[in-house]
Image (cartoon, rainbow, N blue to C red; front, side, top):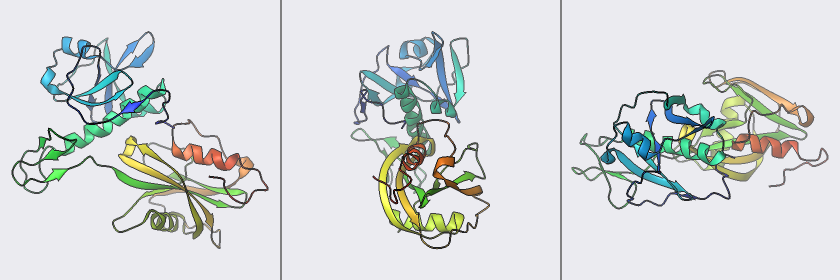
Length: 284
């Protein structure tokens, strides 16, 4: 999955760090990221390169490191495309190699969206300030504190013996088969979210809900939590057409191949595919 970057190490402890010339710069505009092409490969521009383009040090902010590579957000500078730098859609991080750079790029975009959305206090409207002690935005007027936005969501592999339920989204740019998914609501346990989302999207009841693993998914500011669940009762699908374009029961040997290996969805599908046909439960 995209966060599995070992032997590289992700370090996100909040700290004040002075930028150096070879540190990487993350610069985003809308749903695009600024990248440089070097030796035929896409990579992040360095502070030396961005500084030469006119950026000021006070426009940068340290956010995390991977091994010895420090990453800084760049705010407020309208960088122009050139022979050196070009903007790419954030979906580039679904296929960018090496994987640790893809993880850095999409994780940085989540921080960037959060900072930009918290410029003003949601309680009194005053301009927010960055905390000197932790990664928060603080209102100097009413003392409101905002922490980074992380939305919990579930991914559900619904099984029925040798069959797995796969669906396609009705909206957005992703058109491959996926598992049932949805965000947790206020007052819900994650298990309740599993039951509700499956019922809402395909009209099915589930039982024997088992946790699999989790994944940070910065494409949607989410923390995904994966579960396997078994069909409980009738297998007739009642499609929620505003959310899904299609939902299909696939026999294990007929499950279509996924486009890449960065997602929890892909890993869970492959986990089910790899089980022996005679097994009735998932080993997790």
